[in-house]
Image 1: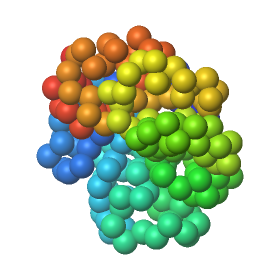
Image 2: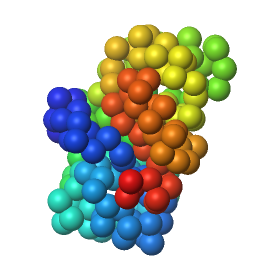
Image 3: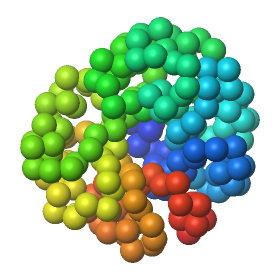
Length: 190
């Protein structure tokens, strides 16, 4: 899956279901969200979790930093690519993003906009990793700040974290982000 395909999937339904447990996965699979962020699992269970997403006709992105039993080495990316049908990965680590892209996986880099220094550095982080998209945390930051980040990075931006209601979704999308990601199940069914 390349950046254009990923963007196309988010055009119709810009809400990404982010799941942290099996019960939430069940609800996410029933939602209209086409993309599922998997924020849990172990090296022993991630293949089955990804398979469930794929069997539902959805796209699976594994947050590799959160899979118990996988390290931050290239071998973790190789494992995901060889033993699961994941469409892509999410990571905070530029080196993992870069390696995953070379291995043909779609990539989303999670970045944290906690202060002006962090915001200034986001452009450098993205340049180092050659990422497909970034997920900015927290997603409820002011639209003005989201616009600054989009100008600095020149890659599609997902707003994630602390998105709690329809107003937050509208605010982020109005700022120009391509999508929002949330664990808030009510938003998956808006």
